[in-house]
Amino acid sequence: MKKITTLLVFIFLYSYASSFGKEKPSDNFAQQSVLLKMNLKKGLKYIFTTNTSQLIAQEVMGNKMDIKQHTDIDYIYEVIESNAQGMLIKTTYQNILIDTQTPQGNISYDSKKKDNADSPLKNIGNMVGKSFTMHASAEGEVTQIKGMQEIVNSIGGDATTKQLLKQQFSDSAFINMMNMALNIYPNKEMKIGESWQKISTAEMAGMMKMNTQNTYTLKSLEKDNAIIAVQSNIDLLPLPNKGVLGNIEFNLKGTQSGTIKSHLQSGMITSSVIHQEIKGNVSAQGIKIPMTITSDITLTGREM
Image (cartoon, rainbow, N blue to C red; front, side, top):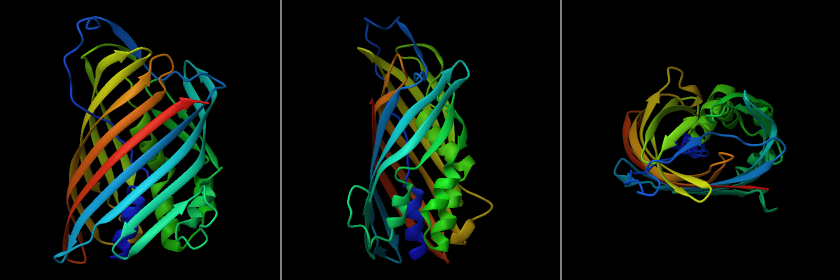
């Protein structure tokens, strides 16, 4: 069970999503079209905060073993270049908070505090102040990451933790993860009520991948912001190479819904509110574990 608990802590450490239902367009703006794209300006800095509150409800051999987890992560985005080919963004970890409550005990870490010496997650603090760069297109698609592996190598920890982190934050896995948050724009003009689709894939802990089919809808215009609603279907699929956690099998599917507010001129996500539900089971050592994962995820961003 220690392996499963460790897996869950890392699988959902950096969850992102977006979605919600469609509404009838306002008569005043129904025929108005706006260009939806990512257009951050060179030299500007933004601070983004992600908050995730999660309940993993599971039953092991008739015993309930719930896990509650809350994470807060602050990033600083500095736009190094911005042109027709896209944007080069320097991303720096500013603060990390993790609070996990399990039947085996509680695990917490807060980079803003100094009393983390006894935390099993204390090495996560080595990420704070470290930076990587990413290339993003006008659609928000992240095509290249540089410097992430150096950050992972700085974390340290035991062999299992190191391998989990290297699998979770390989360049390809991290690109996919960032695309789940940023690759939301159609890069064309849309009218209120019109929809577009995006498919995102993210590798989880080197053992499975999360496929998310997203339908975005321009819900309304609010001053200088576009209100974008999204509905998504989620499939968690196994990978051929199951990594250090051994022969654990997953049968999990879900949905997510929420609303994104995006600044029309820059494409900066100023707020995002998400609700996600995943249900199914995990099989380990011949034991099938029914599981429900409920997550509430918020993101806020502002220019510094």
